[in-house]
Image (cartoon, rainbow, N blue to C red; front, side, top):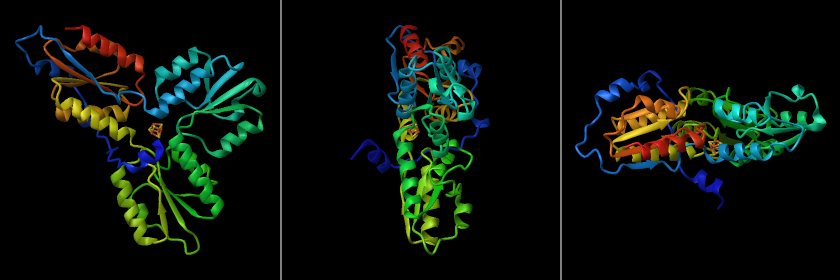
Length: 325
Ligand code: SF4
């Protein structure tokens, strides 16, 4: 059984709904609530989550970008490689800029285009190849596997149903491998409206980051409407693993640091989870934000980070917290 199949076996219970208002944190408030321990000189235990930062697919994509530096006269990514400005800026400094389509490439013979981790529709690859542009795929293998399911469903004449957000680039990419004819279902109400075909098998896949519970409810509805349904649970469990580990570390830490972008919903979700287990949890973007935080009285500090937080930022915070006592 390969990693992907193992991954699919696990149930992803991620709750992707995030209430931004309730997740706000307040460092002033945090300082007032700080615990004053008597033994300030005791050694501090700093626990860094193993799952902090890039998931497998994002890390792989960034490494592929680095491997392409200087390989061709022009190297681009098709759209931002991940949703992290620092990473995109760093790549730009290394000579890897962003284009949004094959049309924007002016010197195709001397250009390499890297495909992002969450994939693109086949038509975009075809457009690059038609211009003889060298293509390097950084598509996460978990996503590529869904593309293959979609392509096979099209070839077999099966009806493809994608459970996910129709605006999400990953879903649009999957649909592109089914000639943009898949049925996309976002919620239970839409599932109830599903019309079962009488002459086709139905193949169901999910957006990799879809909420597992919602996926399960939608599948139950679809199965009642259409008995002839093959369901492939293609949800990736990277987010769930990160959240579970953060919760466990927060439970046993006196203070908890969550590192990530202010607008990163997966980082905000981590903050909420940690805050529910550890009152002294706070959210920082970089080491600079730690200046606002009084950590000296805490003997145990946990650290986690969102999926798009670069490792160097995490390491900087970890070594600072380990030294600062
Ligand atoms: S979240 Fe999962 S599917 Fe998406 S890039 Fe990361 S490992 Fe791949």
